[in-house]
Image 1 (cartoon, rainbow, N blue to C red):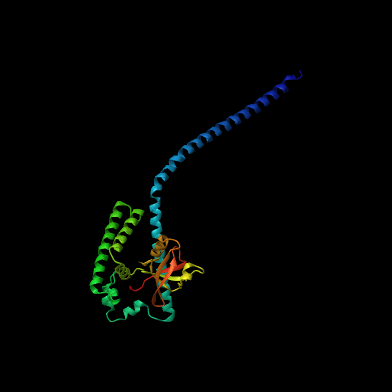
Image 2: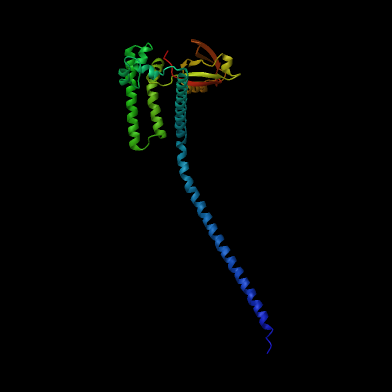
Length: 282
């Protein structure tokens, strides 16, 4: 008996419905995956404000932290410049065959005695510079008191877990500020010298067409005062120049070719490049 013609049509319909069912299942899976992604996106959107919230609380202290970092950076730059100058000086001595200061000191008769009594505060250097022994001892007493406060600050900050923080930098700067405000300018100059710290800002370059060039400043000059106030560091000069009125004629005292010279510059940037130096007090 011949096969019925209905069978091929039935097979075609079955195949078509299988294809439709497969396409429908694929569409259903795609829809489920899309819903999952949308749900995940909404969760992330809800989490982002929560993660950003602490930043809003940190904003008020950011200014103090930036100031502390800026001060630390300035101190680091000064220390690196001082080290670079010492390396250059040592290289020049080696090339010329001259003995280093340590070798010269070691060859002196009482070198071992001085080495045993060497202190971070060199009162003998002050006396050699013409300072009365009593004044040198008074400065040493002030230095010892400040250093003791620094040790206590470090201990307290370490115990409480804020050593090296912005708060620590601020309190350390406050100790230095108290010491400086308690000394006159001459004694503060002597204090810096006795503790081996830089106490001068020397000009290395004068920019062309700058107020400094017009005023008569030259490379090698040492800035002593600005507007009647002593200058002991690059930061001192920068702060004084920034606080001056633009266009105002400011008297500046400099050590030029061994003599103190008084020049006048307009308020604002002078246009000179400086480097810190350690010089005998004047």
